Amino acid sequence: MTQATSTADLRYPIGKFEPPASYTPQLRLRCVEEISRAPARLREAVRGLSEARLDTPYRPGGWTVRQLLHHVPDSHLNGYIRLKLALTEDTPTIKTYQENLWAELPDSRIVPVATSLALLDAVHVRWDALWRSLTPEQWSRSFHHPEWGTVTLDFHCALYAWHGRHHVAHITALREREGW
Picture 1 (cartoon, rainbow, N blue to C red):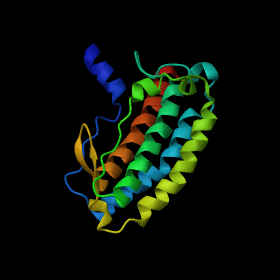
Picture 2 (cartoon, helix red, strand yellow):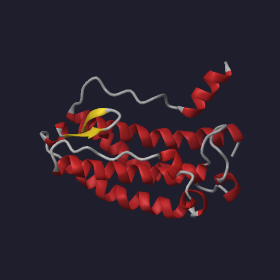
Picture 3 (tube, rainbow, N blue to C red):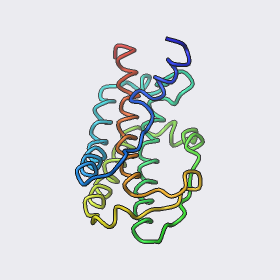
Picture 4 (cartoon, rainbow, N blue to C red):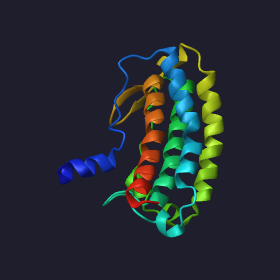
């Protein structure tokens, strides 16, 4: 295996996001269930890690586990707000954010991870309730992403189902490689 392949595998341990070819009520439910399980899976992935291990990069040149744990609620809070915007406005243009720069801010480097795990739990209670309340017509609502163009709620839900699995896999793969 080449170094490039190895780095790509470490960056995308479950592969890059691939949008489904079509969205069915069953797929939507699976995605919502996956999003719902993300906080517990993330909490389990870091159970028992020392402060030193939390400050270990999950891959060479990557974020530390701590930064990753703070990133997930940052991202999911943005995802929750984007869902609310799409449900209350006609194709709103959302604001992007510089996630790599956010990960360098002091709150992502020094705040205990329990704070972000609690934040993730709280936002997911509301996000889950909102996802589960959508009518079939609402799933086709959308927002405009400045870099991606029009994003439907179907796509948005599938992306965040992947996102939680993606970051849990970063941690579990690191633990496996390091024998933790």
